[in-house]
Image 1 (cartoon, rainbow, N blue to C red):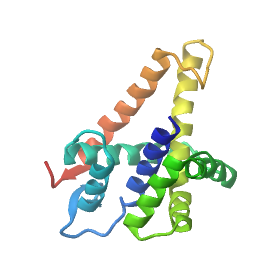
Image 2: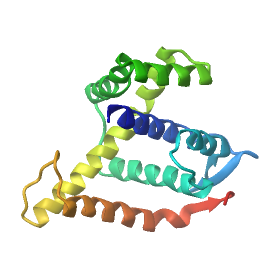
Image 3: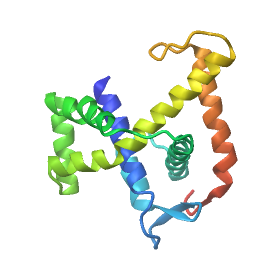
Length: 184
């Protein structure tokens, strides 16, 4: 479970970090004029289970960007303490386990970076992951308040999970027209 969470969080962080790369021949898509590189799409392919299409990967990258922007618009930020806790719960905890250490070391070697550089990359992108989680919690709380049901962050009901999914779908529907694809 921790390994899966770590891999998803790590991938999300690296996906967000590459959204602002300079445009060129390696552009898979643009979102609001900002390029999403084919290299980023390929990186995701390496770490994905199954074989999502390049277009599906672009959609994932864009949806994560949309959620980050929505959280920021609501004034949600990440404190340094939250960033430190995130790093402790993901990278450092995974690195203490033999399997997690092997995965991180392999990734660092493939990227030509040290563990400290890896941690710095995560540190730079951690706020986006944290504010996304805060946004989802806020949406869940709002749903519970509107429906006079108790809020339980650890065990959300199916209705609460559906409310979060519906909210995210609504944001996607409002923004998807801003994507220009150069991949299938």
